[in-house]
Length: 110
Image 1 (cartoon, rainbow, N blue to C red):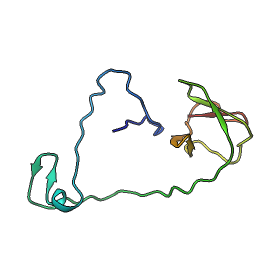
Image 2 (image 1 turned 60 degrees about the horizontal axis):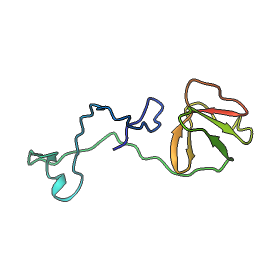
Image 3 (image 1 turned 45 degrees about the vertical axis):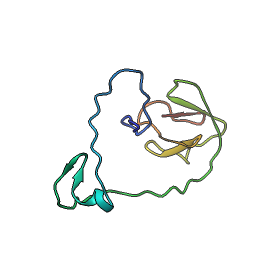
Image 4 (image 1 turned 90 degrees about the vertical axis):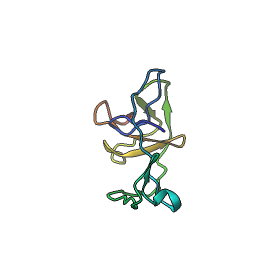
């Protein structure tokens, strides 16, 4: 289970209790027969309002990342290619370009 910040970037555990409450909902076979966690209602569970997104990514260049930084340094000018809120992938991890911070020819805030 991975928590995300308001920009949908992965958050990592600092050792403190994140106070998460997690429900697991079955979608197929015996799990779809009304089971939520360990509670069985004997009625099928309906899952609605979900979205699926495509993983069609365009390679636009490389960046440098510094440990614990919320900024990526670019090796090229991506102005016009990226906007705040866009999803980018760095080393197989998806990040969202932040709504704050400097977004210019040499910086991408995440």
